[in-house]
Length: 118
Image 1 (tube, rainbow, N blue to C red):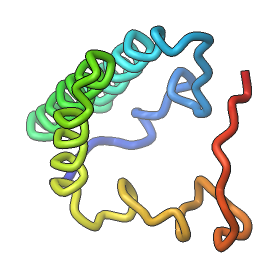
Image 2 (image 1 turned 180 degrees about the vertical axis):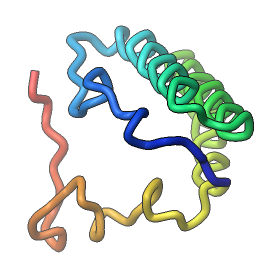
Image 3 (image 1 turned 180 degrees about the horizontal axis):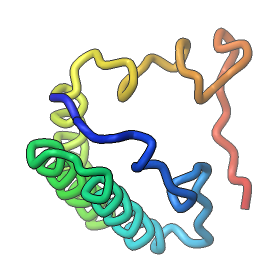
């Protein structure tokens, strides 16, 4: 799997992280909107049709997994996510061990805590 697009045309302020939402039930709509931005930016950056298909596939699958999660079908949610991760393979841009992740700088040998910042 390889996306082809002009990256300088792809970046936009609406996709800068972190994303903060007030309520858990707002997450689905916010994520769907972010995916729509990604899709529109990819088209604007002249991504090829295969890249557009990849974005649409992952958008659909991730939102499907989230719907399963909200419907308490954790087994199906987990299966969808595991399949998506296995499709990505060992591409470190998309999947990385916590101990090597740039998202969690510092001493990764200690426990990592995910805090509610709200």
